[in-house]
Length: 225
Ligand code: DX5
Ligand code: ZN
Image (cartoon, rainbow, N blue to C red; front, side, top):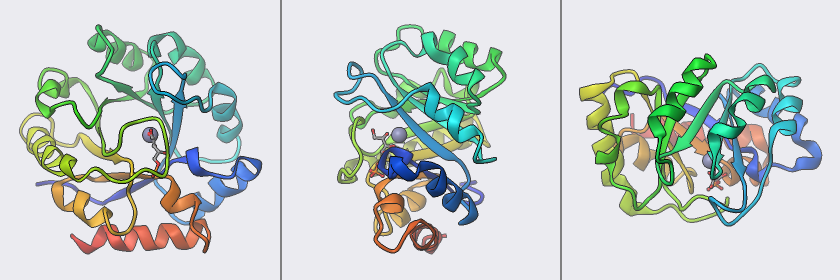
């Protein structure tokens, strides 16, 4: 297994939007590796969140890569706008996309990194034919749509399976997990093979602040190494 260094991707879904720039700067200072931006349209998932203007604003306050988790029915339609606003990578879902390979090609044509996301009930083998074309896989460890949900433990064998597939088919591809990641679940997903951890509430809803939360999460993630 070749996981390399564990990376942290704070999800701003749980941030205080009245102080978003400040919180993202704190995350950067605390050593966050990228900022995870959850885009929802109320159709693909039962919630709405944020869009292009947030990306444009954050582009001015951080040098960290901005990764866009597209939880929308037609991601292709918005790729240009998000790119112009300063996005660095896109996570697009396998579910509901009849032309996933085309979406992946479109992201690549824009010169951006691309990842494929799968929901908890979606089996790992659906990735087999697309894995060689992507930079990243995102295994959802909750059902997408909301922060503050409980980690679904039955996703752990799937994370192991995806790690095996990556080691066999696409070494160097990131294996990211998203949902319910906090200090008790971080060592479990790292042990299963994840190398990028998205965390929203564990970072932005921690009473001791963003910096302390990131330090605690990083320490927990490294426990299993
Ligand atoms: C859920 C989003 C997540 C969310 C995670 O659909 O994709 O990125 O922010 O939140 P936590 O870390 O609180 O489970
Ligand atoms: Zn997400």
